[in-house]
Length: 274
Ligand code: ZN
Image 1: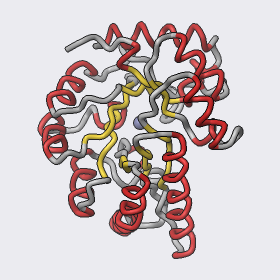
Image 2: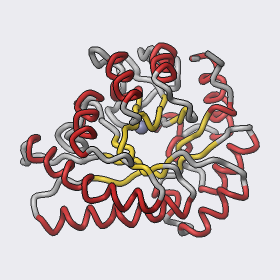
Image 3: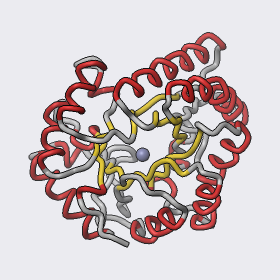
Image 4: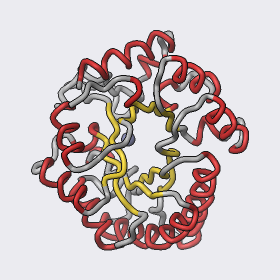
């Protein structure tokens, strides 16, 4: 495997949360990073058109727009509104030149996981044709089971694969984030099966610290935790994935540091972890 040099990396703007979209894109591009995956939180303050201009002027590729979904609600009207929001985000992803829209499925205390999963399958079946028309893929991201109560009713790669097979639309696939699935039994076999089905759309990297201070906001830099990143990357590439590895680190500790220095640490850590 080639080392994960900057030309093989994209960075999620939430990784350098204190930076505006323009600051992030300029810094990534001047460090030789190949792509940016903008978050809605960084695009909305400037608007989609200006965001597209900023990204294009920096010459960055856009693997993903992050993130749509959150389809699990008690009422029909709320569920439809969530689908409409994702429909608009698909259009925005197209305007940004993004390959895909990341989908976080949603979950809600009080709604049984079975019903929640039905709602997600229904929403994805409704959205996939719109995504196809827009030339944008939908990347369903299974989240670690610690988020099953409030963020995601899809918690393993294997169940995400089954859900995609059930919806059976070529525009629907999976974003594999090592933080969420590194622990999963039969990981290599599942990755291979997703690759064979043509549904391995994205590869997100960071690390899982052995004793995180916060379940969401203390992700580690590659090499700081327990994830066998190189092994998983090997399986992902063996399954046919040829896209950019996307660095996605939410860390209050890192956000409080100098972001230019943090970016240099990211680049060094990616190279060392691969
Ligand atoms: Zn991710």
